[in-house]
Length: 341
Image (cartoon, rainbow, N blue to C red):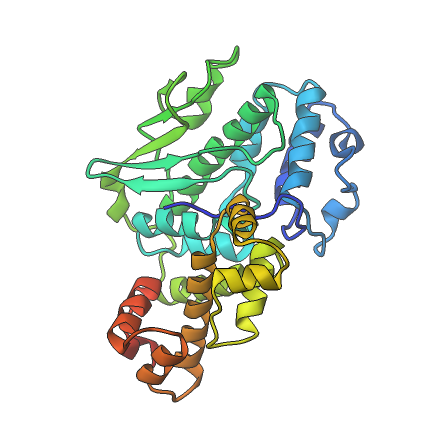
C-alpha cells in the first residue's frame, strides 16, 4: 500500500520534528537560530501551540544540520525522540490499533498527517512485512541530505513500533539503496538489526509473525473513534492542498454530480494530460479523488440521513446497489447494517 505525497510547502503540521532536531543540535553546541536559518521558523514559534510548519521547512532545517557539520548520530537521535504521542490524533490512532497488522496498515493510510519527508509503502508477504521508502521529498537533495532523512525515518519507524508494541520489536534487517557511509557502524546500534548497503531499494523488514500481536494500548472503541477522526483530518487536508484540493472542493460542492476528468480539466483551464501529470506529482489521481469523495459522501449520508442504500448508490453514480455495498465494504471493512446502527 502506498501513501500519497502531500505538498512540500503547505504549512499544516505541528513543528515537533523541527523542535526535536533543534534540540539535538543544541546539545552539540549549535545555536537554535543557526539551525533554523532560512526556514521561516523562529525559536519562539517552536514554543507556540498554534504554530504550523511544512515539510519543506523541516527539510531546510535538516539541510542546515548537514551544512553545520552535525554529528553523524544526529538523525538517529532525532528519530529516537519522535514518539507517537507527539503526533496528535495520528499517533493515538496508531497506538490504539487492535493488532500490529492494523498498525502497519493505518501507518501507511494516515501517513499524510505525519509531516512525511519520504513516501512509504508497505507490503505483507507470508513470512515478512516490508516497509519500502521509494524517495525523499526534498528538491535536488544532496547525497548527505538524502541519507540524513532516511536515517531519521528508519529510526523513527523503529521507535514508533516500540511505542505501539510496548517493548523492543526490532526489524529482521534494514536495507539501503546507497553505499555504506563512513558512520555505517552506527546503523545497527540504533536500528537493532543487521544493515545492508548497495541494495536494490530502501527497505525495513519485519517478521510477519508479529502482525497478530496486540498493541499495549489496544482499545476497540478508541481505535474506531480515532480512525474516524483521522479520516476527517485527511479529508480536510485534501480540501486545502494543491490541485487535488481544488478538485476535491469542486466535487464536494456538487454532491452526486461527477464530471469527467476532461470536463474538470476544462473548468480548470488546462488539458486533461496536464491535469493528470499535476495530480501524479501530488501523489494521487482523478479516480482516487472521485473515489474519496464518494466515500466521504456515502458515510455522511448513511450516518445522518434516512435515504435508502439504493438511493445513495444512485446519487453516487453506482450502477447498482450491489456495487455500492462492495465499495462500502472496501472503504470501511463494514457492511451497510453496521454503519447505520
